[in-house]
Structure formats: structure tokens, C-alpha cells
Length: 166
Image: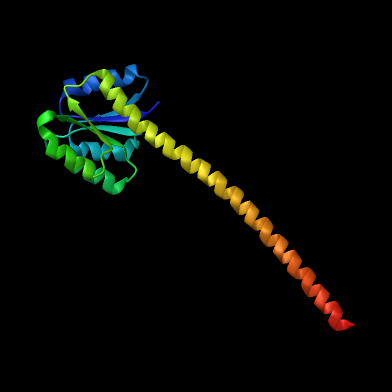
């Protein structure tokens, strides 16, 4: 399962999210209480996914998304937001967050969104792997064609040299 970083200034919210994630088989690699801590913990652990609160002291969630995505463009971040923070959620999504969850939430809703974000990532990885394999096969075919063309060219050159020598 996934390694997840939880970012929220509320100890109760961190505890609730941690319980949901662990019950689903995920590992909480670290927790952070603000955006600056989130960046440091992301750098340190490179988690598969981050749950990010929006309103926090020191550096808010939108700023943290911008900073993390600025350094780690493949970061997968899900915003955790109160209903009245729609503008900030939109800003976070425009900055690179992958999805959002509105508080109050159910464990089922949290896991549905986490699974969506992680599955999209897995599908993308599988697709890239398949494409790389296909490209390798194409490359082998191209190399075989080049070798055949070179062999044919050598035969033609040898044939012309024999005619010149006759």
C-alpha cells in the first residue's frame, strides 16, 4: 500500500486521518502541522501521497502545494478543506493538487478519493512501462531493419566492385 504524509494543524484531524489510512493498510510515514513542515517532511520521505489541510499557521496548504509541486512535480496531494474554502481549493488544484475532500468527511469518502488518485498514478505507470516495452521492441525491429539494409548495401557494393574488376 501507499506511504502517506498527513499535513494538518489539528491533532484530532491528524489522528482521525491516520486511523482511516492505517485501517486501509496504508503507512503514515510522517505528520506535519504547517506547510513549511510539510515541505521538509516531503523532501525527507518522498511519500506516495499527501493529505493537506488548507488553513494552517506559518504556511497555508495552497502555498505548501505550490512549494512541493515546484520541487517535486510528480507529488500527489489531496486537499482537505472546509466547505467555505472553495476558492482556496480551486487555487490548490490549479497549483497541482490532484483532488480534494470536504470536511466533515467519512472514511469511505477519504478512501475513495485516495484510491482514485493512487489508481490513476498506477495506471499511468503501467502505461509508461508498456510503452517503454513497446518502444524497446520497435527499436529492436528498427535495428534489425538497419542491419538488413547495411547487409544489402554491402552486397551491392561487393557486386559493383566485382564488375569493375572484370
